[in-house]
Amino acid sequence: MKEYTTSTTSGSDVARTNDDAANRDALDHDSEVDVHSREGTALQADPAYTGSWSGDSLDREERTSLRRVASQETGVEREEGVDIEYRQVRLERVVLVGLWLDGTLKDAEDSLRELAALAETAGSEVLDGVIQHRDLPDPATYLGSGKAKELAELVAELEADTVIADSELAPSQRRALEDIVKVKVIDRTALILDIFARHAKSREGKAQVELAQLEYLLPRLRGWGESMSRQAGGRVAAGAGIGSRGPGETQIEMDRRRIRNRMAKLRKDIRQMTPAREQQRSERRRTKIPSVVIVGYTNAGKSSLLNRITGAGVLVENALFATLDPTVRRARTPEGRDFTISDTVGFVRNLPTQLVEAFRSTLEEVGEADVLLHVVDASHHDPVGQVQAVHDTLADVPGIHDAHEIIVLSKADLADPVDIATLRSRFSGAVVVSCLTGEGIDDLMEVIDQALPRPAVQVQVVIPYSMGSLVSRVYAEGELLEPVEYRDGGTWIHAMVSAGLEAALTDYMIGEPEAAAAPNPDETK
Image (cartoon, rainbow, N blue to C red; front, side, top):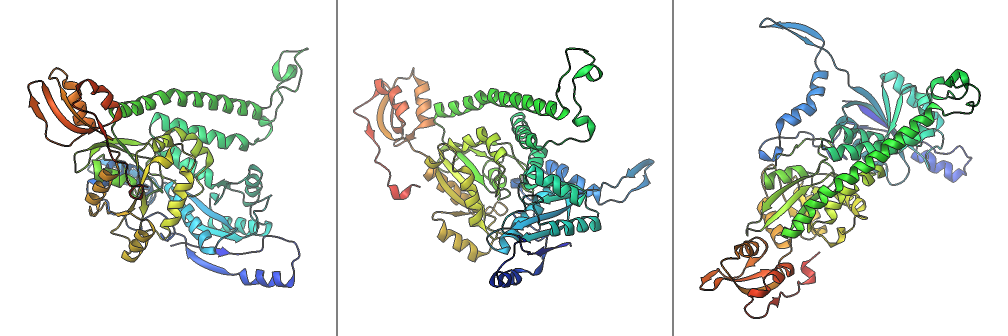
């Protein structure tokens, strides 16, 4: 079990007063924290995959196969006349580095543990981690010069392949730090983009992730030797002779142009995929089927909840951003009301802005929802911080404030009852569930039934038997108030319907339609 050292050091070389020096000395200390501790991350220490809620086990086995192979020793053995060769696969070995700029030391440690969970999800082996206390990141090397040299010594000692920074690095900072530590340096944004690239499966999801990666890469291109800076003008370079000489186009400029062209094509492809999604939305609007969207922090239990409610069989894995592509299924409340329920991409603190923009079309599904199921990991030590991170990400999505939000406290089988009681007092109307045991699922379905929008107009109609399609619409879109009667002139129905359906029933009305009473504002979000 590896441990990392959290060292707090001064972030400035400027001389300070005696009081400042005393404060700095009080901050300078070393403490050891288990980098693989699940405290502060969204991962479970010992996940149990049992029951229909856990999704497809084959997909999960495929995801984790690389780690299993890596633990096998290289060798050849003979079994039943077949030569079986085991080759040792070496996972990428990484060292984490972060800054404690504000807040408490525990906040910085929790952020680094979450970075460790992201690195493990990406298929690497976390060796160690370093946190430095500074007022501001060093503009040249992110860390201070002294701490950067210590990091280089640590990387050499552990024979690490990569250094991962717990924030987004400027291109110049990344290059300078690479020159010091002599290994590859990436930041939190690049790590999350890599995970998204691994897990995206749909055509639209892959295009969105590639666009985000190219937007991140464009300002970070760097030349490697003469081939990246050679000029293309003149007879020697181009063979065109007199009249063609000039500065030409450097290789790095050509790469930038190709990236811009590729980005333009990806944006066009994503726009062309939009009509299909719009068609699906318009069909749901036409049929007036209410929509429920599941949102929440990554690994909070969104896919498990979708599987519990609908039996969708979506992949469930103890990893961050295990599922990215939205899944839409049809479900029914205990009262018999149909609705659609969809899973969305998970969120995380400091989610890269490139991903938020790239997945804008996907997030629009959230803005179209009638009900939001906000899944919160009740076993996490900071569920309130997770809720705030999700709200911050969704704040700019059009229509998000019109949806009714239901807080779902998941993983009740792992959470402390005292913590659950505290969360229920903080989030009024929260529902406690456990996808493992099934606790609270029935209560959640009843809450969803109450939150779904209801038809607002009360009508009495006699629909001719030749207009059976209208009767079907009333059954599908409305709510019957009394049993139907089959009379001489047609089917008598007393029901609540939407304004659109009321217009289609105008010719068959008995009396005047009545509007439903306005809802009590205290009962809505």
